[in-house]
Length: 187
Image (cartoon, rainbow, N blue to C red; front, side, top):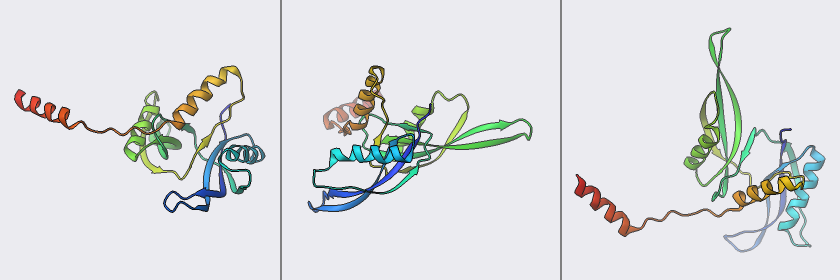
């Protein structure tokens, strides 16, 4: 059974990192659920972790999200919406047909989102193109897990990927200089 994702917009008090004061924010979250009622219940439950006992949330909107697949990646902190066009050849008309689907991919920037989308699509048998990638306003994704022992490993892996901290790739000046000098000597 495929997942149905609901985008839930939630209004709540959040600490503004710039000013250091609490402000009312409305942010979208993604929840895997089987109905609007369950989506409302799950987002309320998931958001309770972020709030103190005196804080309240208001769910301002719930709608079915148009994502074919959700893909968390390690060391990434933002979500990107990738439009993937699957290309099929229609033998009757003799024309190419494109079918669009949207993937939600976790990455640190657009280039990494493009690379991650290609990594997800590498086993696709048909041809495809990636005509658009844009940063999504989605703050967090809450998949559904039934609690079965077999699923606990998937829960752990998904949570580790989603919560991993981005790694900054800093250049070691000495090693870079040695590499440049070695390349220059070879020429």
